[in-house]
Image (cartoon, rainbow, N blue to C red; front, side, top):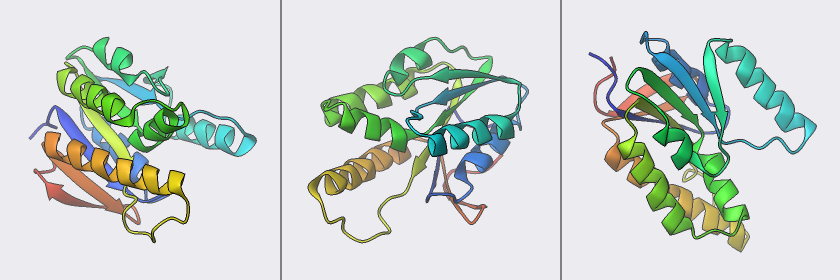
Length: 174
């Protein structure tokens, strides 16, 4: 059974969700496209980006799209599989740019649905922790929760990864 047009891979920080999403991409012969939403502002983040790039290997087209994911998705073709890593950093970028989160999220979802390529979206599950102690963190947690719910609703396959182990919540793994 092939992957559906939209797959959501959720997990906590360092849960193995990105690595698992990459394994899904390798199950197809399609051209692999990586849409990166991270912005490397410090040495630690630059090292993390480099590690992720090394893990993937050379046979990926990498597109850096910290905010304008819609443009990157609109240029894709049915012969490709896209790994968008990750919705959490994208949302952080939108919040920090003081954009309208609801409007940006709606555009993000519309672009995912309209994309002619298969898409796997990686996102953090942020609802397992305590209530944050500041307004920005609470705004982020709530917006991420709403975005994940919308992504899960639109995705035919939803998988959560914990300690590197995938658990399917919706759909069937190929």
